Length: 63
Image (cartoon, rainbow, N blue to C red):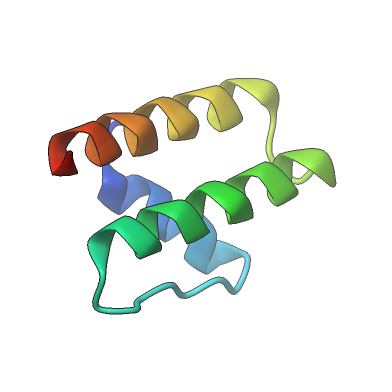
C-alpha cells in the first residue's frame, strides 16, 4: 500500500465507500474505518500502520 487510492481500494473490499466532498473529513472517516478493520482483525498490523501513515501525510498536506 503506497497511496491514498490503495487505501480507498482496501476499504471498498470491505464495503466502505467514503466521499463527503470534504477531503479532511474523508481522511478522518477513512482513518476511523482502518482502525476498526484492524481492531476486528480484518487487516494485519503492517497494513494498518502503513494506511495510518499515508492518511496522516495527506492530512498534513491539507494543513
